[in-house]
Structure formats: C-alpha cells, structure tokens
Figure: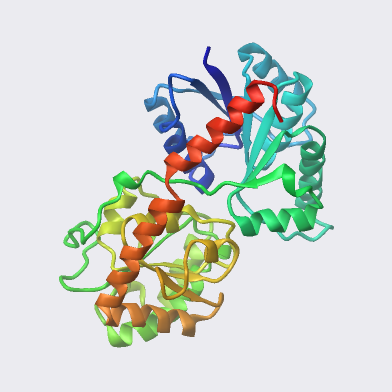
Length: 375
C-alpha cells in the first residue's frame, strides 16, 4: 500500500516555501507515496495551488483566521480524521502548531520543516506564538527539518532542542528547468542592446535589503550607464522601493516586474544575481541562480555562506553596505571571465547539494520509517 502524506501549510501564496512545494511533490515516487495538500488560508488567490493540482494532487482549504480561534483545532482534526493519512508534514508557523497538535490527537506521526530564523522580542505576540509552536514540537513532533545547518544550530541554541530531534535538509530545486547562457534582452523589459543586467528575485519586504542595492546602483551606473536592475517579485515594500529609486534619480534603470512565473527565462537574460538580504535561513532563489550558472553577490548572513562560497561561486558582502555591494557588482560586471567561472562552479554546487532528488529521497526515507513505527 502507498504511504499517505498530507502536507499542511499556512497558504499557497507567493512565498518561497509555497513555491517549493510543487517542485518537491513532483519528484516523489508516486508508486509508493500518495500526497494531499491542505492550506489554512487563501492569500492572493493561492496561485501555487494550481501548480499542485496540475500534478494530480488534491488541494484543500481548511480556513484558519488566527491561532486563538477556538474552532481551528477541531476543524483540522475532523479534516485529518476524514482522510486518515499515515504522515502529516507541516510547513510554516500556524500549520506547524495546529498540524502538530491535530496529528498528535489522532496519533498520526508528524514532521515539520522550519524555513526561517526569527529573532523576536519577548514582548511581541509573535514571540509567544513561536513559544506555543515549540511546546507542541517538544511534546509531539517526530522530526524537525531545518533548511540549513546554521538554522539547525540556531534552533538548538535558542530553543534548547536536542540535536537528534532536528535534522538539516537543504531545499532542492529541479535543475533541468534552468538553462545556461544569455536570454533575449530585447523583450518586454526594454533592455538596451549590450547593456548589463543585474537581477534580484524576492518577496518585497524591508528585510530583503533591496533598498541598499538601490543605494549602490548610482556607483554602478557611473561605470555602466546602460545597466538595468531587474527586481522580480511583489510585496508591501514595493512602493517605498519605487519612491527610493525615484529619489535617487535611477528610476529609468530600475525595472519592477512584479510577480513572475518565468523565473528561469529572466535568470537567463541576467548577467549577475544579487541578494542583499538582511537575514535568510536558506534562500532557494540562490540555488536557482546557481542552476542558471549565474555569479552571485549576496549578504553574508544566515545560511547563505552554506550556499555561496566567497570567490568560488560568488562574492559575499556585509549586509546594509551599499559601497561593498557596488564594489562586488562592479568586480563581476567588469570581469566577465571571472563571473562566468563563478557561475560554472555554482552549477556544480547546486547539482551536488541543492538537487530536489536528494531532498525527496531523504523525505521518503523519513516517511517510511515513521509509517513503519520507527522513530
């Protein structure tokens, strides 16, 4: 019989964890595993749900307004009781808490993936919500996955969790959809012939640090006046970034594309990829840039040094430093052979470490042990 797994996630909106799900699900052994996905909220129409349904995997919505609503847990218990999975796999905060508790009530083994590291003041509501989540983990969770070793060590230290309870499992991508080389720059973005293209793909929020890249751009434009900076993604911080570009007088060199479904094509037309984030456990978009053989400039924070090795497949810079960002970008833009060499090495690293096949085989092993009654 197939092992039945229900994945519970906060929503199927535009976040990184959400976009990873259809890629991962498409690489499981369908002869041995049967999956179903449950979203606890609808954000922006839950666009990722359509991709999952295209795989022939059912997607359900069990609406949860907030963790304090008394009807949440019984509603999720009824849902799981109806479908009777062998394993529950939760992603993101609300799903981690409620999914772990509902699974425990029904004596279903549960595992959870932690995608972010958060430094919170104990006065904040979010701090106490995370305390609740970790209490559920300690009591009932069978396996916790951290998406980077730095995240794993962070949780071991901050949550005093036993090291054997938490395992590093790097997010994987499908390398086959990313092609090397240059794309056609004469496209909808009106990029002038022969101009350099710098690319950032991110959900637009202040913590992604794109404001510092905008501040670095005037120095880059002094050497490469036709350079274009493509910012792919959307979010609440888009308007402040647009206003900053205008205030700096660089709005004609900055393109806000909004959310896109053709990231491989956009990566192909870029020269270098930049992620000026202020903190990230393991940004999957860097693995995608590596798969597209692009040299990377990224902040030396979180799990990024586990992906980008300075001088090997990219350049690491201190966060919040427009001067260092400009210097690193100019180094790569001015030395195309160096940039191409870093990009080639990045592809090798992505193939070894961030291949979705590796991730799925490890998850399959975990599911089989839990389904057989092992810990």
